[in-house]
Amino acid sequence: IVTYKPDQQAIDAPLGLLFAANHALLSVDPDRVRAFPDVEHAYPEALARHAKSPPDAGNVLRLAWLEHLQGRCGRAIELLDELEGGGFGKTLADEIGPLRVAAQMRLCADATDKEARLSHAEAALAAASSASERLDAGLLLAQATTESGDGVAAARSLWTLARLAGAG
Image (cartoon, rainbow, N blue to C red; front, side, top):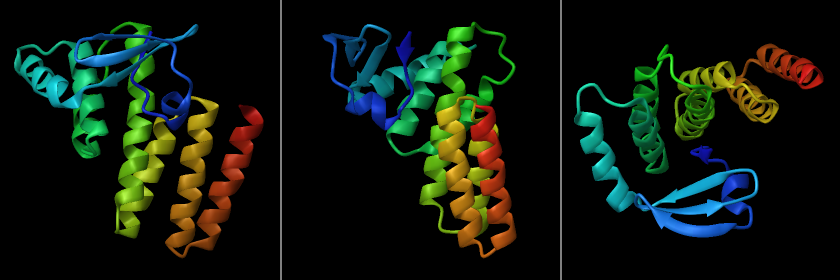
């Protein structure tokens, strides 16, 4: 499985066996393959592949990942929306959710408007599927609700997060 999950743990983990392919440095670990793209070369290629009709789901995911890496998370989410209800394999489906969560969380962090921060935090939590994603997105939502001045909603967010943690 080539991991497109842009989490800090994947970046900070020691590198495995290294090789280069498809405009990326790949680290082959015992349980996964991590890709570190050469965005300068990979992005134009991904754009060209996306322009083909119909676009391939794997290429759409790759372009969304590259958009996220360049800080264009709104565009990444638009691309992920193209993949909704795609009926593709589990491996590809398992990559979409974490990228959506990461993009929404980054949009939340970058938003200056309180309503936008809340909206992105809620979307991140709704897309979260793993326990760590739910924890990260839930904490972000609690922070966004606290900053919005709604203490009751913030307490509710933390209560929901505690329940999720207990169920996870």
